[in-house]
Length: 409
Image 1 (cartoon, rainbow, N blue to C red):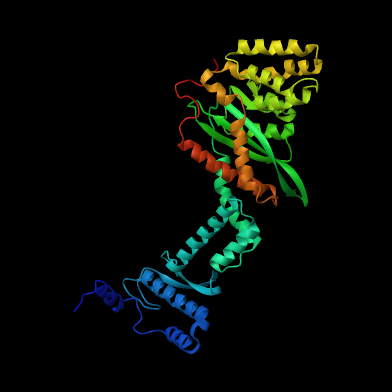
Image 2: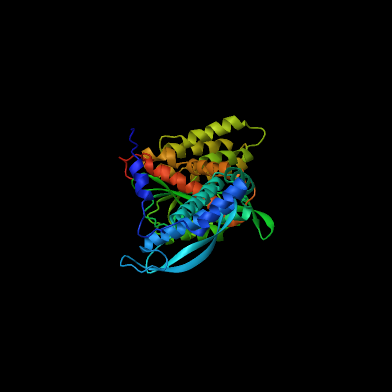
């Protein structure tokens, strides 16, 4: 006779247990009659009966005694039932969950359901983070799970991420010698009106030369008050030791920067300066030639040479185009501050490219939605994208040379 390894396990399971009923309860016979009379048409009711009996048996096992039985092994008391509606592929199922007193108990079948529900919500939230609109998510969930998921439910599920994301946004900061800031705009519905809201972003480089995303905020604009609040929030979280701020030129940001970080050096992005230059070149001059001369200034080996080349440009165009010469003399020095810092750091510090790449990554996710229902939804998505990016950065090698101290030369 062939021996089956699982035979003994089945026999042990079928053996009478001190907490099991001696015979099948009435509801079990009801279950058999349902299946016999109606077949698959009664699967929902059959599953309901089966789950009820399984939960009651499991409660008896947890208590160490059958209902109303007094034994030395009893560890607590039955305490009635609590109604619960569970969404299943067979539709909503009304269950009566057994309760206990004196011993912790919850049916394992429903624990698994709770875990599945949490996993489902996180999956929906992750789909939302990946840029899938709530309407599309609802359609996908209905196909995959047989459940009708409304946009409201999807948005509620996405909010499950909020606590974790808020904790990351409010985490403690430390010394950040290099601070890079920028903003981008997204369409958000505010009070029934579609507005273009500013997404303020800050990135830092630590004394060890590692880059990290410091914070993100949603504001109505880039006005000074919003930038000032954003920068103050970074400082309140412990940001200190800033020696250089890199950004584009903006009146609101400049005023807030001077108010919150007085005396800290500022590096204006040369790429934006090169773009602004085109507005000041008269038709009589070659844009290619003037732009090449400006690139020569930014690519100079040191500050003395950069100043010399800039003075040559100013002298050259003073008579031809006084407006251009004035602009060069006033604005270009703001893009030469990086020369005051270690040579090994200049290439990556002189522009705001790193933050702009982050903005492009955010845009890649947000352009699917096109319009956010509120400010919280935009902040949630942007934070999730930035949090993932920051985790990737922490696993990468250092952004700046580890042999060069992050101090001004």
